[in-house]
Each structure stands twice: as C-alpha cells, then as structure tokens.
Length: 441
Image (cartoon, rainbow, N blue to C red):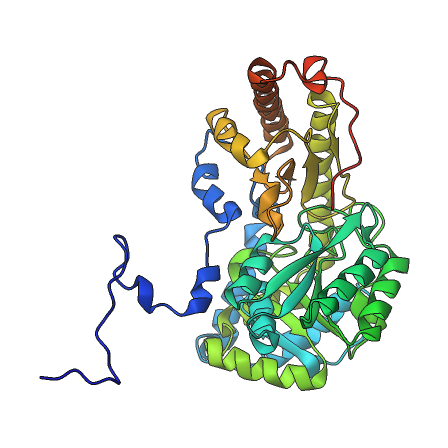
C-alpha cells in the first residue's frame, strides 16, 4: 500500500518524546518557567517559600464563600451548572464596573469581557495581535508568565528600563526608536503600573500620562495589567492608565488577589471593536467562562462587604511586608531592595558578582526558596537580583526565611573569597560594599 503525500509517515522524535518533530514551531516558546519549577520544592513543609505569589487565602473567612455558594445553588443552580455567555454574566460585568471605579475608571459593562483569570485575557489579547516576529514592549523586569505567553506566540519581548518611579518615559522613547530602526513592528506595550510584579514599584501619575502620550504618538496599544492596584498599604496608587483613555488601552483585572485565585475569574475592559474580537476568541478557547464561578463571585460582591475584606487583605500584606523589610534590614543590611507600598513583592539586589540562579540549589538546601531575577527578563538579565514574595508566609516564617537567605548569601561570598583566582575581592573581604540603588534596568 502506498502512503499518500497528504499523510506523510511520522518522523522520528527524541528519546523522551516520539512526537517531538510533529509539534508546531510556536511550541518552542513553551518552556517551564523558573517560578513554576519552584512550586514542587516550595510545597515541602520544611521549606520557607519566598518564591511564589500565592495570595493569603487564609485571611478570607470560609463561611463568606460557603454562604455565597449555597445561595447560588439554591437560587440559581440550574443556571450555575449550565453553559453561559462568552462575554460573561451581565450582573457580574456591572459589578466589575464598581471595582474598577476604585481605580478611577468609568466604563460600560458592554465593554467588559469575563475570562478564566486575567492571565487568560492576556493570552487572548496576545493571540489577537501577535504575528511571529512582532515586538512586545515590557518593563524590565516584567511578569514571567506574560513573557512565556508572548514567546509562545513567537513574539519578541524588549524591555524598557524602570527606576523607583516605574517605567522611564525617555527609555520608552529610545526603545521605540531602536525597534523601528531595526524594521520591526511593535504590537503593544505591556505594563503593570501599580505595585509591579516583580519589582514592587509604582508608576507615578505624571509618568502614566507621559507613557500614554508616547504610546499614542507612535500608535502603540497599551495593555494595562492591574492585579494588585487595590492592595495598597497606605495611600492608593494613582488612577489607572485606562482612566485617561478608553480607546488606546486594554485593562486587565482579576479577583484572584482580592478574593481567591481558585475561582479563576478575571476580565478585560477593551475598546469596542477589540471587545468583539475578544468575545469571539474567548468562545473559541473555552466556549464560555465558568457560570458557577461567576455567579459565586457575583453573589459574594452582592451580599458581602467586599471592600472591608479588601481592607483586611491590605492589613495582612502590610504586616508581612514590614516583617520582610525588617528582616532584610537586620540580616542583610548591606544589600539594597525596593520598599513596595502595596502588592506582594520585594526586589532584592545582590552584589554584582553573585548569581541568584546558580545560588538557588544552595538556598533549597538551606530550606528557603526564592525566584531568581533571570526569570523576569527575556534577555537573561537579572542574575544578581531576587524576587522575594511576602504574600503567603507568616511574618514569623518570613524572618526565618530571610535569616536562611543570609546564610546562603554569606556562603556564596565565602566561596568567592576562597576560590577567587586573582586574590580576595575587596567587596567580599570586608562585607561593607556600597549598595547601589535597586537594579531595575
């Protein structure tokens, strides 16, 4: 029997995967991130995990959720267990407007698309806009899984430098000019302006306006990801970028940080034409987001003082952030770090001759986990940076974790001093190196 040219025989794969040569080229971007690889280690009870950004769901009284679930099943059970709209439950979309109003956003529920978490919205937007070889601009450092998504659609992520006030507008202008000089196309600017992941810094109000003006000048869509904006410790962050422009900004939100991630309910607020395509893409991907989860979240928002619960989360995270900053000040006083005013993360800068990725096995042996800075750059930068998450461990565990981290860093410095081929390094010998500002380039 002859083999049709329309159905060629399977090519040989590698030793682990016989289908290796059958995958689409874009799957080359689907590599396990350093963050995800840490979860197996961090789940061991003896390890203090300062790695993953898991919310403190223990601060959410279970009876509040149980009551909402019971009421949904009693009153709307047949709807909750059925397929729903590809755009999302209408009442929940109206309630999302109240949530976004706290960020200064005025919008229509018609332009809200509910998704299976905000990361799903990020993937849908990327699918709609990215062709192979396109460029996405993002802060440096940036959210690791966003870059995984961009890479999986064969986009190139190019970073824009930050400082303690967020993305630097002049650096954005320079990056845009460089990309255009290379003949490449920029599809959108991805930014986490409030309590950024991983750096913890917040884009100032003046810079929000300037960044938006630069994007509009060059015809670049802004993709504003805002999972942490309501989780401020004292003063709230500036209004969302979307509050300034409804036509040039897609805003992504989520209930994962202000309620619980297990519901997997997020949303996108998009300009009208983009919204239509988002709905079609949502239907193509999942048919409809979970009616059950949406109705529970809607019931929660309708019957619970959710603003007071957000305040409770703020208090929990404020206490844990203060515990981390206090422990860093006590155990690692010669290093530098960011001091976030909200969110989940501190960005730690090591001496330039230390490598946080190579140091990680020693850390795991010392029973502390963190995320190496290289995870948050598309170009391999960030080797002397560490993201520390204070959201999940208790204040006591945070102090233990930072003390263990001190042992790890001191051990690495001792090794460098012992084996330096050209003699002792001055900054290692006396341990009094001058700490530069946190490296956000």
